[in-house]
Image (tube, rainbow, N blue to C red; front, side, top):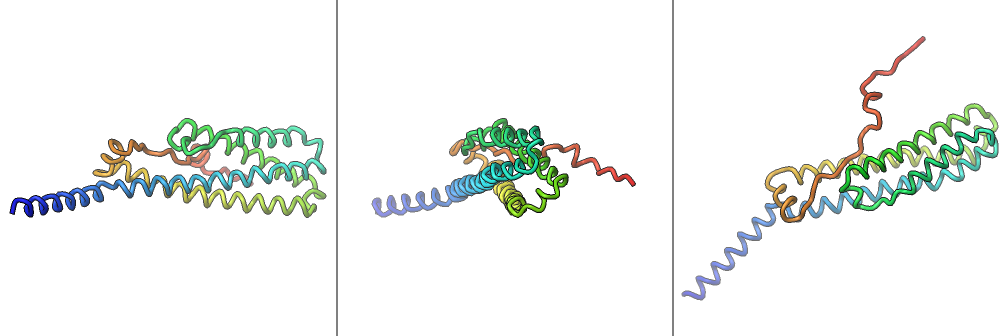
Length: 200
């Protein structure tokens, strides 16, 4: 009887332990961590696609508007700054590095906007098939960036909830040493809050 009782006790304890581990969110947190990293990789992939299109776009514009040197150099410099950052999953754990990355990408987007605006002043450039193709690819890439960022934002929101909610916050903090992850923010919140001024 002693041996059977001991066996049943061990099996019962093992089952209770298994149930308590599944309830602590260990596997869910690990899964969300991986999902967040995968979503981040897709954001980086789309930013890289945009960076790869820029040299061809700059070269095409330069052919028609070489004297727009300041704008062209601004795009090249913004691209260099955006691609010079070493973007690893560790950036996701460092809010300051994440913010620096976000500012570099916003600077590149702004410089690209100025470059595209130049085309309005050059009808021959606007009519150039190569320019139109590049502009179309760039617009498509911007849409892909938006979708990738949205997916990342959703993943991070789900991950951060698990890291903060009880009892999974205990597993996150003491067992896995996980912290909340930074998320994308609006570059200029005042501009969003302020309604646009309409003049006639």
